[in-house]
Image (cartoon, rainbow, N blue to C red; front, side, top):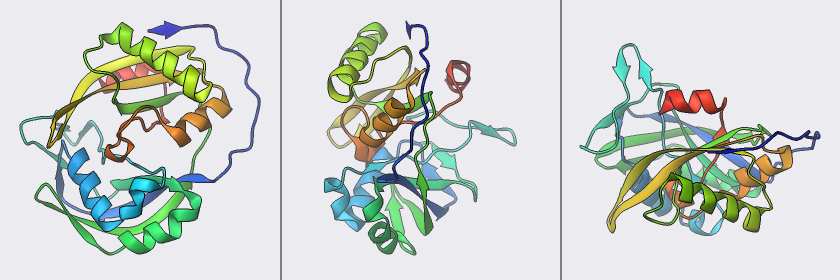
Length: 228
């Protein structure tokens, strides 16, 4: 874990050139390990996603609801989706209309599950000082300390972000035709607003179309521990 004293931050205007587009869904269940299947299905429907600096968030549901516990990756287990579950795709604002036109009203096959996509609504990125990525694909065979060093170096060199507080989470292999893709969850805290925005817009590491390196707002370190 990295931990340094926080610094004062100043208010900034958040540009809307990158947004998340949230689509309503019609789907009862979905494989837990669906990142690759979802990516391929969406790329088949919207080929320009591969060249648009886009990111596809994996579909996520609450850890527990009405006594149901979210299953772990592996074993062919399924998520139970609610009516409030959304599909979120991060794209340049100029691409929103084209994305909605391509996806609204279609159905996709995701690992044998039918995923019906409804209306999409853009949502601007905020400026939270704490961000969380469920999956970050870094170099293989790194322990937690080495992974955090890699994170700090890459953020400093590529995005001019200084890591102040970081917590590395559990490892999750994502299934692909070429074998398991190793990933780790990652929380970064005490980001400056401009750093937070930059990180959300550009991400960290490869495989953004499989949900890797995409950061979302989070409550903080305690909440990450509970999620793990």
